[in-house]
Length: 84
Image (cartoon, rainbow, N blue to C red; front, side, top):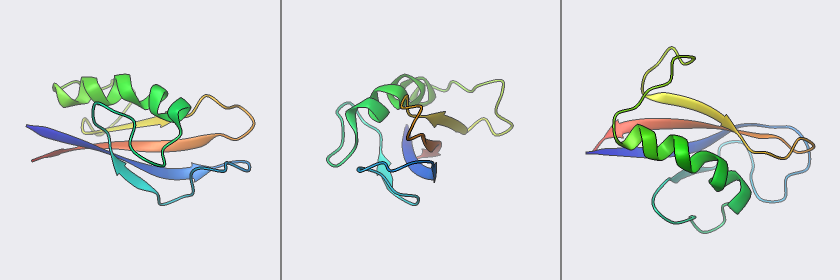
């Protein structure tokens, strides 16, 4: 069984929801205090990682870097898969 954690690694612009260093577990529902737009972007990658997927553009098979869809206030998240 795996867990996937999201951590904000950068922010460009005045995002009102997230700051660098914020961290949360990605599950079936949007966690409290997480932007639903960002969660919508992260969710497919996190779900794939829960079932063993990795992405060819990442050097670490237990990591994925995903950005929120707001081009003016880009928040970049690192997804990290760990064993539970």
